[in-house]
Length: 73
Image 1 (cartoon, rainbow, N blue to C red):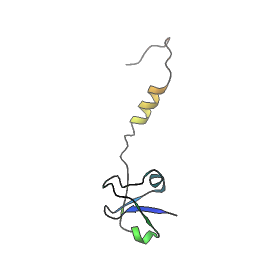
Image 2 (cartoon, rainbow, N blue to C red; image 1 turned 90 degrees about the vertical axis):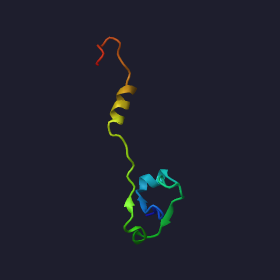
Image 3 (cartoon, helix red, strand yellow; image 1 turned 60 degrees about the horizontal axis):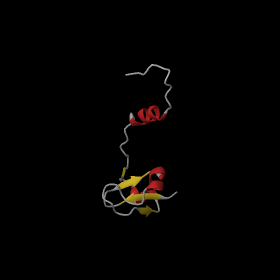
């Protein structure tokens, strides 16, 4: 398994995050491949901050509306 990390920030990335990233979101440097888990031992896991409430609101806004139904407030 390929493990990506940023040695300067001491961050490690999940495979899902590493598939989308080429540079570190904190310092902007290129990510480096760690050949073993020992190389990234002690690095903190990168956890992007997502608003969990944004997804249901976005999904609700994307749904078509029926003009015959009363509108909610």
